[in-house]
Image 1 (cartoon, rainbow over the protein chains, first blue to last red):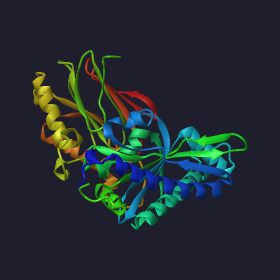
Image 2 (image 1 turned 60 degrees about the vertical axis):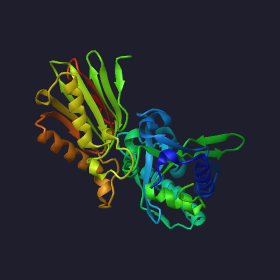
Image 3 (image 1 turned 30 degrees about the vertical axis):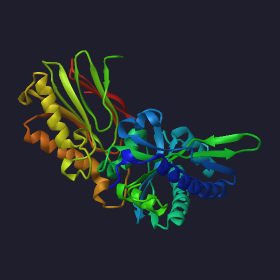
Length: 213
Length: 162
């Protein structure tokens, strides 16, 4: 088992490259869905100690909307598509045309939830299939689940598998930008890909990194 | 604000009056407060997993597991002069943040954490005077050892004092 403390910067570059390929496919899927030009990029891949994840994501208690998918197959892991609540509202409003959608509201809007689920599903699916093509590893997302809550409370759930092997998580960040007419609108969303510890080895191996490098 | 002691995920710390101790964003994790109202001293652990025997590799972070974290809290509070027979507990967390059709055991981690914590405290004869566990919401908790008051903040209910 690889110690996450020893993951080297070149390994992170490989994961970033994989992330960018996935992001390209995901952006194309989202562009089609919204009928807008969407760009996505992976600004960085980081290894973060658990107790700093809150700070890294803008505060432990930042309220976000999260779509969670469990990845099954040869390289299992967890995946989150996370948006600050305001951005999630905007995205769901954009998708449904219903401007009353508010994920912080008292009554949950089924259409809004369904739209966000679908967005997360399509994005994650595109992202994963690109990563799967690239690595020749079979990876399938399970049906998505949604939660709106404090970011640390949400993310910690996805860290359980990783926490059995260490105290660090690998986070592949993704920025989503919408190019409007003349001005760019940005959805500041993030993907968190949290491979189970054995999967990390498999992914790195698929990129030609040997076990003891 | 120097009196505020923050405990991160998989960490544990001790606070004495006039200090206040807090941990943020408990999801499936459980926050365990052990305290003594007379000594005005308290310890807080933010555990992620029920049992250290499931640890797989490397150096064991004892604060991450219910069993080792509670043992360490009891020891630290013993050093502060409070024997375990005078300790009381308040616990919060152990939610299920997402609803799944899947029966996968790791998806039930919140309830399993709560069961483990209660079982260990019961074995140590430490009474649990308050619990706010389960459900599907994240919690931030803050404990004041001077008053033994626990504050619980959630997105849906705001701030509650107990």
